[in-house]
Amino acid sequence: MGNQLLKILISSIVLVIMSGPVSAQDKGSVDPKPLPPLANPNDPHLGAKELFARKILPASLAVHSIGFYAKGCLAVLKHSVLHPRLPTTPPKPRPPITLADLPAACRQILIAP
Image 1 (cartoon, helix red, strand yellow):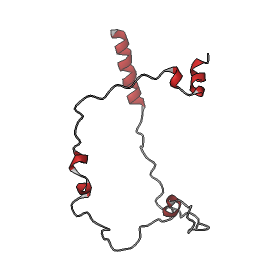
Image 2 (cartoon, one colour):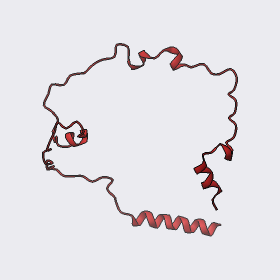
Image 3 (cartoon, rainbow, N blue to C red):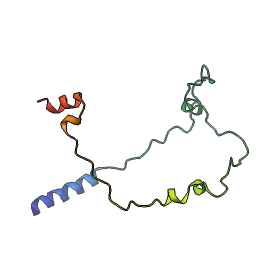
Image 4 (cartoon, rainbow, N blue to C red):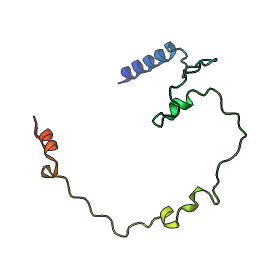
């Protein structure tokens, strides 16, 4: 047992020493090239990813908030939703599923050799 632990320890040390620094992420391009323009940017079936991928810089608009919550986002929840009552009696256990309860296709898969 001690011999195996020694082998594992030596293998681990060798592995750590042999593995060099690895970058976790591709740094990408400093000068991104724009994607080609879309044939129909007003197409309702066009995904947002396709539209926003073509924007390199954010819009030059003034910063402002959109909408507000008068008492916070949880204010709409009632006390009974946040703190539900626990059942006084434990729930009845479900009966086990039998082979007869399964659809025919599932039964064939289970019965097949």
